Amino acid sequence: MNITRLCLIRHGETPWNVERRLQGHTDIALNFRGMTQATQMAAALKNISLEFDALYTSDLKRAADTAQAIVEQFNMPAIVMSELRERHFGALQGLSISDAPALKPEIWQAHIARNLDHSLEGGESINQFAERVQNALALIREKHAGETVLLVSHGGTLDMMYRIASGQALETARIVSVPNASLNWLTHDGKSWAVERWADTRHLNGLALENVDL
Image 1: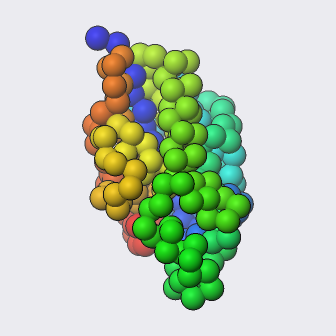
Image 2: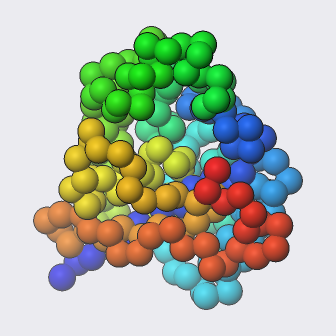
């Protein structure tokens, strides 16, 4: 059986993670803890002598800089793929989760209710986001069938990949965490995706292990 394996990696922490602001497509850089997380994650992959065939990253800086830590350890270039971006949160981007309900009450309600067709005033609906992520996974699998691929992306994007692989309905609340700099494994057997392992942060320690679920 030809198994395709994806190691999904969430970017390291950013200042907006700490402030609990919705980042979406806003291009926020890693903070010091995020850089430490990226360094520890890449070193851990090197220490286990992980063999992989390709490295993909979202084009947003927080993901690309996390991927750069892997590039430096393995001397393998990262393939930039904008389809791996976080969901565009429209009018909610830049707002904290404490301020958004008061500043954009109707849009916030649609967001937390997981209205599948609501674009959050200029953003992406959940259905549009799901289609984008599904297409990205299909493209990567088609190009790398039977191979192992590292993929650096975002919390919402990786949660969508979990839903696709596990069959979790789009309208249901998130049931898994996606910690910063965590390792999350999916497999494809030629017929369907499956979740192999999720939310692994054993490679993080000290400062890097704080606030990983932001």
